[in-house]
Structure formats: structure tokens, C-alpha cells
Image 1 (spheres, rainbow, N blue to C red):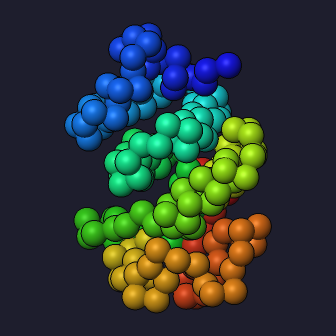
Image 2 (cartoon, rainbow, N blue to C red):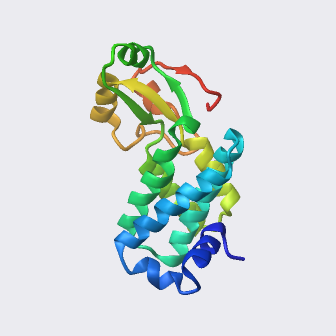
Image 3 (cartoon, rainbow, N blue to C red):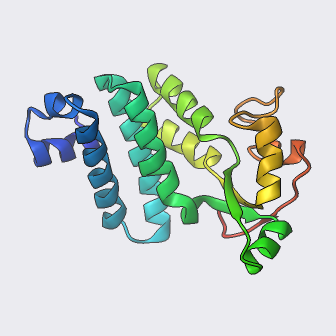
Length: 193
């Protein structure tokens, strides 16, 4: 049975959508932007939207694995169209320093608890190992969290654990381990923890 993305592509482009999608990077980017915008608009309630985002993200990763899109195009667009478009839905907390910086009009940062590159790689591995979309979706839901930081806190993380978790961390461990490791304290908020 075709997944939501395949159904959408067939409806927009026709049955020959596979060759149209792989023909150019620009075509892929336009299609992904349109797909992300349409599914985000179709499920309005916060909880349903959040659930749909993770399911569609899992569906999109599976689609990539099946149809072998260029990996760079896939990763760039997965991050931009899926992870970056849901900040308000996945923000789990903030530091007091972020609050102070925001109130003073200073630069602040949004930091993924588990770097997106790790989440994406693990999701691809899960699909290639036979996990279903629901399992991948639940994995993404558990690991895609954001904590809001002051700029200097972001620089500390970047210096020591940029794009990685502490060396002894494994999936299934505390998703906020990077913050604990660097002694960055934060408060949970928004019901997204």
C-alpha cells in the first residue's frame, strides 16, 4: 500500500513521479516544501499535528530508503522541512540565561537535545532493519526535543559536543545528556518533555 507521500506525489505529478523527483535537486526541494506545507496545514490541533509530523517524517525516511534519493538532498530537506518547522511543538525547556538574554534582546539559540544528524541516521538504520513507520515515528517523537539557550551556552555545547552526544551515551539513555554533561541546567516547559 502506498504511503502518504507516494499518494501525494502521484496526485500532484502523476504515475511517473519517480523520474520527475530524481531529475533535479530543485524539483526535490520544491516538492518537499509543498508536501511539508500541505500536511502541516491539514491537521490543525496541536497533538494531532505533532503526531502527524512524526509519522510523516518516518514515512518520508522510508520513502528515501526505498527510492534512493540523493543523500545530501534528503538530509538537507529532512532537516529544513521537518525538524526546523516544528520548533514550537518540540521545545521541551529553556535556561534562565535564555530568558534573561531574550528579555534583553540578545541573541538566543534553539538546541536539539539529540543532534538531528544522529536522529536521522538512526531512523534510516531502523527502517533498513525492518522497523515499521509507527516504531520510527515513536523513536523520533522521543528524541526530537529542543532546549532554548543563551548564546554563550550554545557555544559551550558547540565546543565540546557539537553534532554528537557524550561518548558513553546510547539511544534509550537520557535524551538531555548533552546538557547534563556540560552542566547546562534548564526548566521543562510546554508539555513537550
